[in-house]
Image (tube, rainbow, N blue to C red; front, side):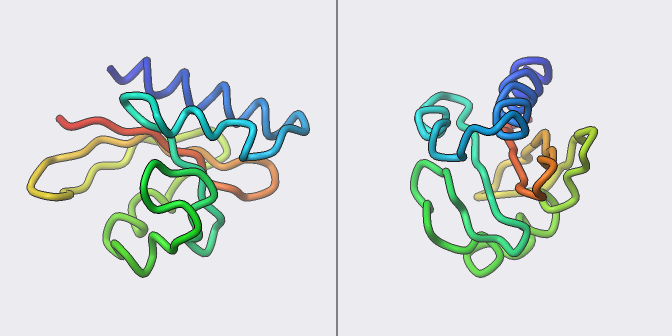
Length: 104
């Protein structure tokens, strides 16, 4: 599963860095596992249920972990809704955070 989430995120980061908009990847939020795209301050641009809302306000501890994304990409772990999650988080050149995770 680690490779699946990493490949999805890497593909989107390359696309955004190449000039595509986050909305070009809106369909990725409907897949399982889903992808999210977030501004550095926490506003979700692409998400299956929280698009337009702030992850920082909705789930601060989750935001704190996924915001650790780097330009190279990194895996972060946290608990959400009683499940242990592993999320691959990577920053675009413009600072957007793209992530995709799964239950461990």
